[in-house]
Length: 360
Image (cartoon, rainbow, N blue to C red; front, side, top):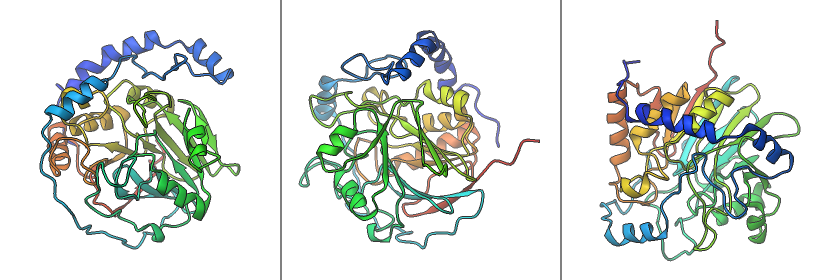
């Protein structure tokens, strides 16, 4: 690994934020909230981020929509790895197939897990408007293996896609794990039985083959105009038996949670980090990382390997189609991070991750 740039902005900014968040964090309050099934980051009406800082509101959203300048995107892109045969998984390995956007198919030797699955043509509440995909999912739905567990990071339309979830439930009846406040909504939409978690709380399969922990993220939630932050957002720490640990961020801005996750759960063998939907920064920096921040998150986490996601499928924001991967390459060069440490997979491509060797 090359020598990292010591003047990373996040290295200057994050320490005081972490210190402030630690002072605001009350462990006794957290234990009491957990024991009473309440959340210490819920004010009675809305959930809040760890640092307590407010994010952009509807007025700022309108300003962006009225003044923003979306870059040109191609109308359609063909996938080089479309429906490629799924690679075998050995002991101590996990296969991560980048399906599209924030959807990964994670496979151990005996489990299949999907993150934020979306096979719909649009990330939208309606079928005739909203961000439209510019490429197929890397795996056709009917070629998916039986899915055991579905992880839903939050309720935005590009992450909680109801038509896809209904298809999965009808076909496979997987366990669905998500944040607080989402299960009742899913039940109303014909998807009952979702398992809700608060930050730092875990769920496991009865046979102990899998444990997942909901981790903090710096983001927000909303399905409409009047339910902002009424459901919890987060990422997932995934521990499958005899397999590498995986950290799936969901949607997140740069924040203190990366340091806290490393302190509480360790450094992941594989981190799935978003690099797209980041322009304009005056608006998006509160909810989405840019590629340089993703590289910094990789460093803070101490991840053995990271894979990029959240790019190249739906035009959500203003940056050009190819900007996330180009800027990621430039950020890695500046930070001294090699390609094998942090890759940007093609849609449909499978990467085999391995456990860290035992420390000597």
